[in-house]
Image (cartoon, one colour):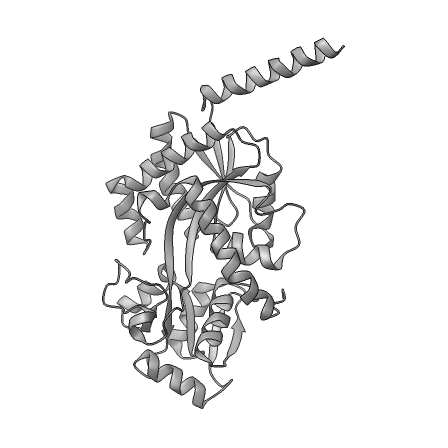
Length: 322
């Protein structure tokens, strides 16, 4: 019996190695835990098209929505760890949500980091009637505590957490106004003057900034945005260190063979280096990190650092779900 068991284990191990060596031999499913047409979906489709060429197999997009992305992430946590199912997520889905939601899976322990992708810095914007510079805005907010309003996608959304962090660093206080439809309605109401400001992803704010409908105070990052180089960073504008970046990454289920992870990671990095992909992402306001920061190891380190930074902020703010 022991001999038969040993043979069975050896056979299974050999089959796993063989499968990993021939990877991929069939289409791969990339789960997007948000709806079609959003920023994460747009990035996934751009990368999937290019990666399909490198891998010689189709990378198919599956949108699994619900519970702020946790349903789609959970779908991948339960998947067979063979490299044929992965999830693409971002700062909000993997850092913010992991501090707020109680889930049957572990965000860190149940996944293998695959690749760190592009990032979309947040921009501090306001209606045109507000003061012109960031120091003037901060002074105005301090002189009018809780009178100003910031539009958000609801409790725990990126705009909400970014606003909480801005308040913490600058010593200001304003009222959060949740919007069920998210960024699109927030931007329209800031333009119309119904609310005062928003801290939102560049991809959402840039069209209105370019048309002169919103005042851009600063990019919430340490470097200027390539798609809008005239907007100063928070460091330059007067709120040093208020960094809020919607970075993106890919994860596979825990236990996926390392050489499979490495193969898919290399395909992702090759896609990010493609001039056509770079051009498309730049048009979306996305910044691509240096190659050494795109690896599976780099994603793992960056993810831990972001959790260490944001979890205390989120928990101290006692953010509750609506």
